[in-house]
Image (cartoon, rainbow over all chains, first blue to last red):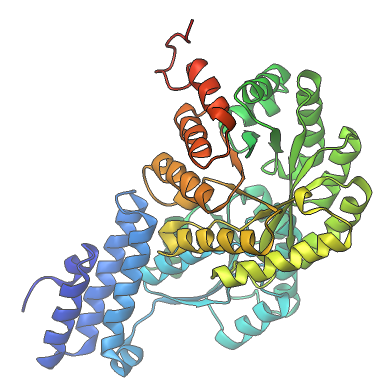
Length: 208
Length: 273
């Protein structure tokens, strides 16, 4: 059977992860089992990052290994990938900060959430269109500049007006964001860091 | 080589406390400490006080100016706050931190630049987001220089910030900056290049080592101004050594002066007699 795939990934053993996935595919093992273990490995990475045992470059490395490994599975990955929920994520317009958002994207993916990342400086219409198209469980708005708070507010208002807030939660995050911001922009919750985002979304989905 | 002292920043817990308690003495002590440590400008940043940034900025500026005549580096993305700050200071020689090629930032700050004519930190950033390559950064740098030259700015009043991104997010983050500085120098020998040192080490441990090493590496390529903590003695030791080694310290005067004030001694050790 070979080494535990979850632990290999959690230990960032890239070559061994790829080797093991190839071996198990060659033996005809169904993709779902392999994906589950890789996903679990990513959960372990997320926990180590949160515990500050792993640093940001290692979090990114784990995501790259995960991508390479699941890339080997090809269509089988896309077909059988069991996501527990979906989020449309982006940094609001007139703000280009992306690192926090990118970390959230990785950690949420680690936890089985399908992430549609719209990038930075995202105009309101793009958020609205993406939410309409993807019908996510969550909308994640990020910003680091306090001068972009009104843009966050306007984005939430636009989603409300388009009837797209109903049935989903709008979460916000970013450096100075706090409860006052949340109340001001009328979001449903704010997340201080990526792990909080993961815990909160899973709780809201009734998972774990 | 110029230093902007970075300590008066409300994201630092002690500064936050001093602002909340309106402890002017603490702010004044930070100003004097940085002046004594060799800062040429004092950065003032209270962006974390979201709903009262203007009020806090004016209070901070008043505290600093009461004790210290160093020019200020006004650090805010908010045109309203910047306007109030420049009005209050009402003296030439200030530095604004920063303009960029983002439409809102540029449109908001150009009128102030025209009226007050401060020196300008110009960030190589545009609306599309953080530039990935040295070529992208140079393109934005060129656009910024040309925009400012149209306003009759001398290159000597422009401090281009090549935009430091964390090494932890990309292997080439350091190299991209080093290449950018070299290319900016080649294109505009008389422009200044400035950066803050802490971004490069975000997300990694042992940040001081990374920051100090990056200071030396960028200095070799032509960076000639830094936003840093001038009270960090190890960092300043490397600063003076590097500057001298690059031929930017006549007769090694600054280096020797730093040595004689005990900069290289363990903290608290006596200066030379």
